[in-house]
Image (cartoon, rainbow, N blue to C red):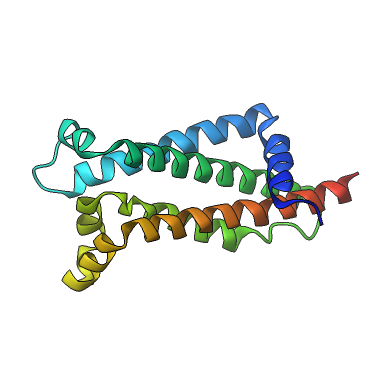
Length: 165
């Protein structure tokens, strides 16, 4: 088995070389970045975009851009795998990993305490305080799930590309 980082790099390069997949990457990355920024603006009463952008720290921006980029890559990989699935039998096994990565990305908005309260308020006060206290662990788990999804997608792409040859 190859180095996991090399496998993910090669698969990502293979996927993003296509103009269509690169567009999917850019659109989905932009969409998720917008969701991460505008979700608290919409859900928190009295919140505005200017205020929301002001309360984010540098690390919040870094994490949002990183999560959005990784989710964009994961989505473009899933589209690529779906295209392979049409031509090669036995692919498309990364859908569960893709879904868990998607959920992890949405859950990753826990980088902002007020976002946690707005998004997960229905879970109760104790859960919200727990998420606020351990928000960096939540973000770390989210990043790990998205990276695991990308790795599993990379393995699927690598396997099917060998079949195509």
